[in-house]
Length: 256
Image (cartoon, rainbow, N blue to C red; front, side, top):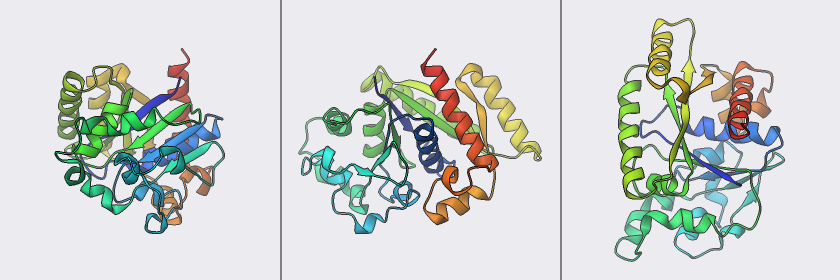
């Protein structure tokens, strides 16, 4: 059975897109079939996979408006076992495009994912940094939500906000939505703040916090600039190994 995981946190700059790219590539490396769905109109997830969204024609916006078959917008990536669905900037206009025209606008993505012909082990959804229609669609389609938590100031305030929003989604649209876990990102063991934030998150959420932590490392922004996952750009870097560890942890949890 395919596991659908939304990567969400309405706070920007916490590592959502980086995690979507590198968790997907790590799962593919471990021989899992993965579909990465870029639901952010900026398309940074797609760019991080080497795809220029300004040059594509078939995209998730057309799928959500029933103008295109979702199977025709799935593209192969540079990585075996990893496919991608990309957006266009016009995806930001989805709210106005469906307002008053669609009976259940929060289930557009969920209904289309059911139409996918190819079998995947995981679908990873990269959400925009807000709780608008796009993120709600992702959370309504997902089985689980993975929450990146930046090891910096205001991290716990952002966690409180996303938890409140997830609770609202569970009560209103998707009662089966569960929390996959909290992922500590941009961790620096040399700074007191990182250590304190990590300790607080683990204390508050215990078994819901991944053991794997994503370190602050130059390899990640460099790999984003190159348009490839860090697992491909620098497979032996500590960042790459951290994401491989996260993928293994995720698989082990699912196979218990």
